[in-house]
Image 1: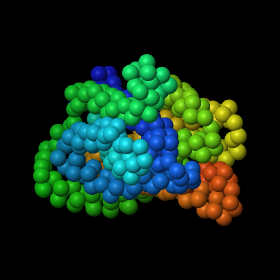
Image 2: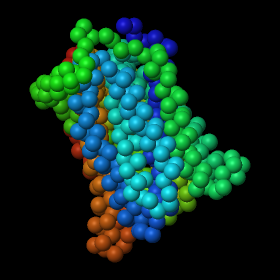
Image 3: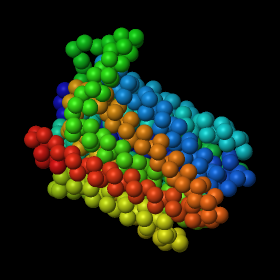
Image 4: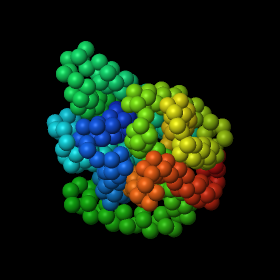
Amino acid sequence: MKLDEHKTIFSWAMYDWANSSFATTVMAVFFPIFFSEYWSTGVSENVNTNRIGNANSLAGFIIVLLAPILGAIADRGSSKKKFLLFFTFLGVVMTSCLYVVSQGDWKLAFLLYVVATIGFSGSNIFYDSLITNVASEKKMNMVSALGYSLGYLGGGTLFILNVLMVTKPQTFGFADDSEAVRFSFITVGIWWAVFTIPLMLFVKEEPRAKTMSGFSAIAGGLRQFIDTFKNIRKNRMVFIFLLAYWFYIDGVDSVIRMGVDYGKALHLETNDLIMAVLLIQFIGFPAAIAYGYLGNRIGAKRGIFLAIAIYIGITIFGAFIKTEFHFYLLAIAIGLIQGGIQSLSRSYYANLIPVEKSAEYFGFYNMMGKFAVILGPVLVGKVSLIVANATGDSMLGTRVSISSLSILLIIGGTLLCFVRPSRENKTLS
């Protein structure tokens, strides 16, 4: 199996271009806005924040249960691409089905979003694990950064089209902006499906000497999952990294998933929230690549530390913002480091684990990330409600909830201090 071929690397990275349409248009912007204004009307912003947080957490919990076992099964049967295709199909169909949800039916919207998010998160397990099939250790940081940078560009490109549809619905043949938003969910499904094709055609899995299928793969995968869990507990560096990642990515993902809802709770204009997300996307494109170079210069671990420190500042400053300009400043800061901390975490971890068990180990990696997503949005939603009920000030509850995420980032950064890779990975530390 040849590594570092341009065609294969680009085909792999294009999946980030494909599924980032869901992360941007659906997860970050249109779902939280449309959920509050169309599907879940007549309740307070704190209640909607809690509902959206619960939706993200439920999807994360299900992935937590499935991720490591699915990874083990995929490794046993050399079927990473098959699993990726299955979860992609699930995400594409469920996202497109949001188009048919009628006004006020927040429960159906909640359910479809949860299943679509499972498709998105599940596919990423196998997408991430395939990086070891396309890149050598030397190229890992840059290849990982390329994926995230194309994700920002692809997600932002479709998002611009979706924004134009919503702001000028008659130009695109829609009756109003609500119909345009609903149709945008279909465009995400199409975009996601079409740009998955290069990965399916040109990224090859390394064949295993003995492959399994059906119940044999499931049984073997379960046994391998148990063995790998034991090995991870024994491999102190991998175990500590996963624990650190669990905490700091919690803060990162919670900012990503709850940011627009936070802006809505502060009564910022929808157009300003959309512009802030566009800033993140198009700053994130070159910034992710630049962060890959930075990771090569100062080491992936130091790059992660830098990003954590900036994110702590973001969560604290976020509690004090008062104007749209302040929200734009936060968006710029997030755009500069979001892709960097994600890509360096992925490449750093990839160099800690055995290549032949990459899907299984990335199952644990994604499990920790999604388990963090269970805690983060729930923390934001519950703190918002508790403080608002205790003080009678809903705005104070909203502000305190976002700043509480800094605790998780500090814990994650502290644990990362104790990760010291072996000599062959010394250049990454």
